[in-house]
Amino acid sequence: MIRNIVIVGGGSAGWMTAAHLSKNLNGVNISLIESPDVPIIGVGESTVPPIVGFMHSLGLEESDWMPKCNATYKSSICFRGYHENDEKRMWFPFNRTWPAAERPANRYWLYKYLTDDSFNDRYSIYDYCTLVPELCREGKTVKSLPGSAYAYHLDATALGEVLKEFSINHGVRHIPDTINDVIMNEDGSIRELRIENGEPLQGDLFVDCSGFRSLLLGQKLQEPFEEYYDSLFNDSAIAIRFPFEDKEAEMVSYTLCTALSSGWVWTIPLYNRLGTGYVHCSKYQSKEEAEQEFRKYLEGVLGEKRVRDAEARHLSIRVGKHHRTWVKNCVGIGLSSGFIEPLESTGLQIVQSEVNLLTLTLQGRNDYNCADIAVFNESVTRLLSVIRDFLVCHFALTSREDTPYWRDVKYNTKIPESLVEKLMMARATMPAWGNEKQFDTGGMLAGFSFSEGWYNILAGMNFLPFDFDQHRQGRIGSFEKHLQDNLGEAERVYRQLEQQRQNIGSLPSHYQYLKQNIYGGLD
Image 1 (cartoon, rainbow, N blue to C red):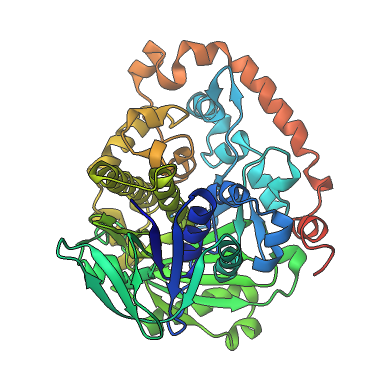
Image 2 (cartoon, helix red, strand yellow):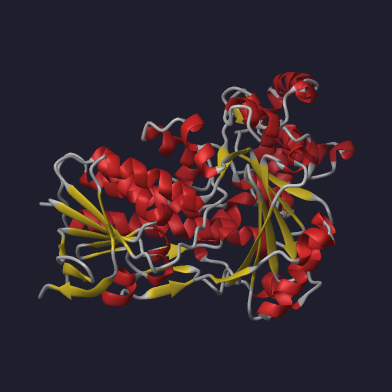
């Protein structure tokens, strides 16, 4: 029976854990210890839609917490330079595609792409399936369209502070102190934490949110770590922040990810600043070379004057996961359990999925057994594996060979067997609703699966279904009879979309929407 839970580490992961557990568990004492001497990495400034439900579940209103985190809305992710080395852009909108006769728009688009010579630009798929790319290009936000899916750009450190206040108000004991030793029981479980300025912290369950240090799971329990560098090469990052010069123009509602010679650059607009960073592989560039290329790119975008004296922060990234994330009475959450290349903004989603699964395991009984541990571990393993598979598609499917990095990515990336299965299906038909049922991805429990969203990247990377003769003759996939019989319905729905497109210009800009609805008219 669990009476005392001890969380090690603050930041966004620690306080997300504390907030969710304190909100949903009864009869459990929760303590969080964080060292004032350990800096917070602050990853996760760009998020994905599940974070919206997480904040709502805590009862936190956007108008209350977003200003404290300088948060903005995020409608999509935009990628350029990952396939051809040019300005063509892939989009990952969060809105689902429109349906016609129980088939998603991407199936109708593929039929037109394969049969209509005037419809042969694969990048047309984004505007055919949704209004989101046009909204983003025009500086608008999907918040102007009721019912749209969205996420946030936010200051992750400030988010931790918001959740810290929430957690303390819900009874979490905050201990700002340093752990000197971890004392074990004879069975290999953790008994207590000895700290510098207080009595030892005893617990029935310890949650490791200590970041890449992985103080409990990695260092003390020595759980093996499985690296993903053979599939995802990047192991370093450089971060630089800038004040706005023109909020109206620069505060877009999407994360921009631009490929460079040995990695990619993020651009994330918060309400008070622009966050930028270069995620790269140290095998191909030294820190100095990477920063030089990064600054040169930024000068072309922001101007030499803005970039000249901007301070750069260098980070190391550990990509992979511990073999098990729940060992004995210790659960790793966030960076301490594992981390995947940040290209698709899944850092906080992984934290949220792990916290939610832990809460569901304990809720209503404040207890666990060996089966619960096994289910948790397998679910997290599958979650990280399917995210890894998705991210590999952004790199390994490239046609680029212009640098040593991209040549190695193109020819030497290890393709996991689980991804091969998905890519085989993608060569037969467009991923769509229900495809996740074809694969045992753990999506139901962990919150990520092979489904419709994959088409955004596969189309942009030119990994489209084969145009099989037997598909045409047998009316399979894009040529299925149901789809062909309803092409007229699809055209009607698409015309409605085009009519809505005409009204985009009248919508408020992303900046103006935030200023009026979230920030009380303040800049």
